[in-house]
Amino acid sequence: MTATRSSPEKKAIEKEPKRPTRAEVLAAAGRTVPDVIPPGLRVLFCGINPGLYSGATGHHFARPGNRFWPVLHAAGFTPRVLKPWEELELLEWGYGITNLVARATATAAELSKEEFVAGGRRLERKVKRYQPEWVAVVGIGAYRAAFGRPRAVVGPQPERLGTARLWLLPQPSGLNANHQMPELTASFRELREAPG
Image 1 (cartoon, rainbow, N blue to C red):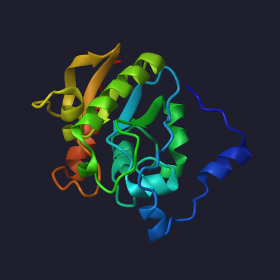
Image 2: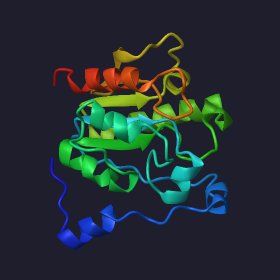
Image 3: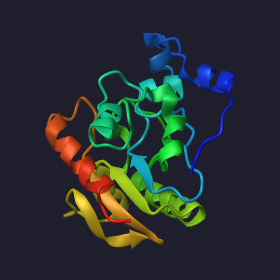
Image 4: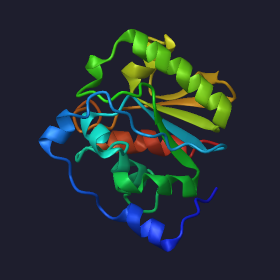
């Protein structure tokens, strides 16, 4: 799958946007970040929900220090470390991004179990519509809450989401000290190397 963009469009996308002010970040509570999903992806990455920094910028995994983009590169998904504002380039390699819960919060602890369950149902509808090969939920606790799987562990899951196979990945937030970069990279690489 190839994203088509003219050179001026690509330059506009790749230009680093102005960093949001603290007030702009705080004002982003409740905002949403657009999905990056066309039909037929190899992997649809599904985050927990946008943080306030992502809500302020309109880009996924945007907070400086979030390890999602470096981990994607280290695991071999991308040929270089993408910046959050370059997220549309994922489409060139068959990857996309969505979230379980759409609204931006300071932390995922602000989300209710009901929001996770409703987010799981929304994700099922998206998967039915766009039919990715894999859905990779990035966040163990969020996956357990959304799908009622309290003992789920990182790696491939026995159940499917519609026709898509499921993979559970650790949350790459810089705040997640439980998983360091080598462990994150190994988990992401295992998914990249999974048979098609």
